[in-house]
Amino acid sequence: MFPFDSNTVARSRQCPKGHLVGEHGGTVMPKPDEAELGDDFSYIIRLADTDIDGLKPITYGLSSVKGIGVRTSMQICRIAGIDGSRLGGHLSIEEQDLLRNTIDEYATKVPWWLVNRQRDLETNEDAHIIANEVRMTRDDDISRLAEMKTYRGMRHRSGHKVRGQRLRSNGRRGSALGVQRKK
Image (tube, rainbow, N blue to C red):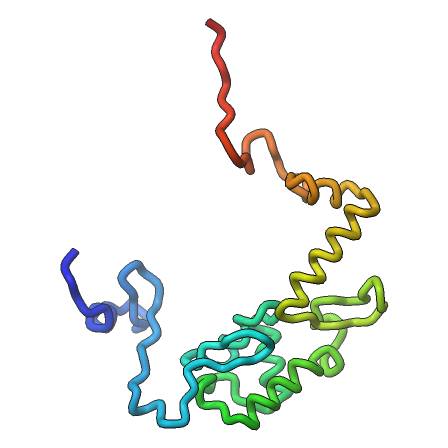
């Protein structure tokens, strides 16, 4: 291939709906001009122990936090009273603090079916876990299953498939096992 500027190629190619198309398909977000962003623009925001891209709308930026998806981030923006389509880098310090508080109090402000940890086994309460808590909670659940010697716990510990998938042909790791012919 010849060297080219990807922005000029992406701008010249459009799908039937008029969206920009990238080199390998898919749509391309046009890069904003530095002058449009302003002096107080933050390229990276730190929320919930995660770096969030300031060039993305805050709804999609929040979804980069583990445990927060697009639907949850829309709810967080709605509760905080922040427009989800604004770029994350345009948020002021007060709005970032408001988002942090809303994320911390999210489980108490939404119905039980919108949280990701319903009726926790230890506390019997609804909670919404995010960031490092997701991994720690998952590991605790797996170790609890293995300690009780349940089928699922043993499959996790041995590294096999847990949910009843095939093992004869799929999911084989390591060296390939072939069939030997009779000589």
